Image (cartoon, rainbow, N blue to C red; front, side, top):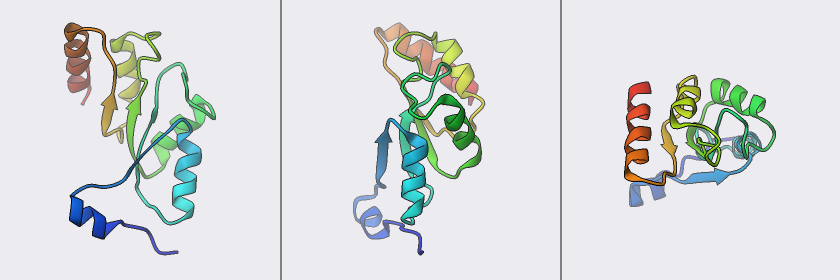
Length: 120
């Protein structure tokens, strides 16, 4: 099966499709099965497995072994993790391209941003 590249739309809009999911391993397998290679996938990635359908272990395996461009969200696990602890955990996954996070104040945003920049 030929890989799907979305080249016409990518050129026209200067953008690529991205996918948001609560089950990254199943979505990645489904996308690969229809020829979509190296997709952008936004999903929960955090130290305690919060909202990581299928389990933390399979997410870690996919993040280390599979070809895709992950965006990590819910990294603070709804406030259960400190920014420092959350970002240290993400540091083991070198292919994470972006981190989507929420914060309650300007200082929390700055702290998390600084931690992310230090871990790169």
